[in-house]
Structure formats: structure tokens, C-alpha cells
Image 1: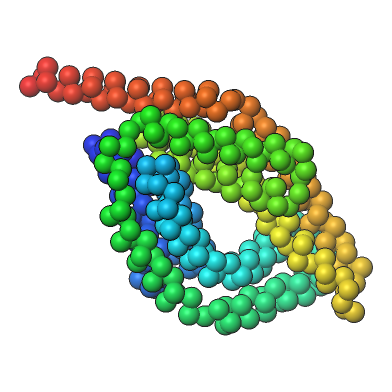
Image 2: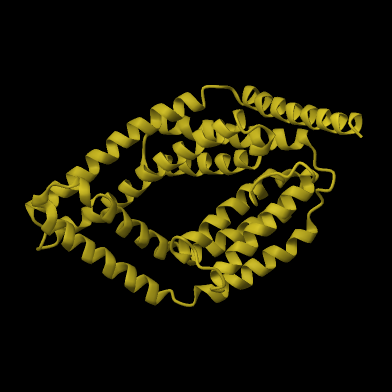
Length: 309
């Protein structure tokens, strides 16, 4: 519930509260005050993505200069751990696909897993101490919330921001259609994730309609995430072909990864095309209607309380 609107608060109060909670969550992970379900790096980066999704909603209201300072701080915190997270993803992905690989690949699987585990250990050791720098940047981001002038932030401004994110996602999908490169799929995943976080904020407005929309975006983001992870792993393994210990079984393993990647890319492209079939204005009208429904429901509830008093 901490990443959802509260109907007893103004939109400005909600967005301040939600952003603050994400910064506090990232600080707690960086300071070792909270034990995350996943790795500390992944948990902190998730808080950062949620915070940046909120920040994007108020970009016009706080001004480009303020937005860039805040966004760049959070971006820089994420960059402190990029290589560690990349190594984590590669290792986790090879472990996740273990059960889908035929038994004859086991020797290749174990060798590659050992290679990736060793890389992760090296990155973690080389980049140790990132927590201190992250804490300094996050503290600045938390204090800068006082600069926000969003007390009068209204539904119209929120609809406009959501339409912009939807439009960015639609544009990213068109780029994938024209050229399905790794970079274009990565940008599409980023935009879908951002829109998913922003829509999740609105879930209390209508658990059925907005809830279904939020779930659809979560599923699409997860699918694009699996595409990203397989692509990332395949890109890392291809240079290993030049190594003297590369074997035929390794080629078969890499081919299996690439085939899974291509299949998931097709599935993701099909689902994304269906999701972004509507024009941004139509998407905006859907969100506007949910706000109006929630406002009417709240008014009716108040009327019933007064009638029974």
C-alpha cells in the first residue's frame, strides 16, 4: 500500500509521501538496516526505479533543472552498482534455465556457472563500499523534496504525465518493430516498467479496471525482463567462443539460450503491440474516467454517512 495513492490525501501529498518512502527504502537497504528478499543491490535499484517513475510524473511542475538534479542523483546511485547487478543477472539467469537444459549440457552449465559466479565475486570485491556514496546521494535526493512546488498538483496534470509515459512506450515499441535490436528492446522494457509503476499508484481508484491494467503491465514488464536477461547472458557468452576450452556442448547451450530469447522476443512484441494499440488520448481518457468514478464513489459514501447520522 505504500506505493499507492491514498484517497484521503491530495495528489501532491501522495506523490511526496510515495517518493519519500522509496528513498527511505533505498537508504535502509544501503545502510544495512533492512534485510531484502532479493540481493541488496537489486532491492535498492528497485526502489530507485519506483522513485524515478514518480519523479517523471511531476517533471513539468518542478521544472527541468530540479527534475534533472533529482533524476541524475538517482541515476548515479544506480550506476554505482550496475556492474554488480549485471553480474548477478547473468548468474541468476543461468541458474534459472538449468532445468530446461538437457542432461548432456550439464558439464557446460557447471563450467559457465562457475565462470559467472567468479565474475560476480570480483565485481563485488572491486566495487565494495558503494553503500557510502549511495547514502550521500540519497540523502541529497530526500532533502531536495522540499524544493517541489506540487501542492496544487491536480488530476489533469497527472493524466498529462501518464499520457506522456504511454506515448514514450508506444514510440519505443515502434522502434522495436522497425529494428528489434537489444538496445531497442531495453528501451521498451524501461518504458513499460515506468508506466507499470505509475499505473500501480492508481490501483485504489478501481481495483478491477486499474488493477487489471496494472497486472497486465507487470506481466509484460516481467516478460521483457526475461528477454533482457537471456539477451544479456547470450551477449556475455559469445566472446567465450574464442577461448580454447570452448566445446561443442557449449555451442549447444548457447544455441538453446538464443532460441529461448528469440521466442520470448516474439511473444513480448505481440503482447506489447496489443497493449499499445490505443492512442495516448484514449489511454488518458481511461485514467480520467477511473478518477471520476472514484470521486463519485467517495461522494456517495459521504452522503450515506450523513444520511445515517
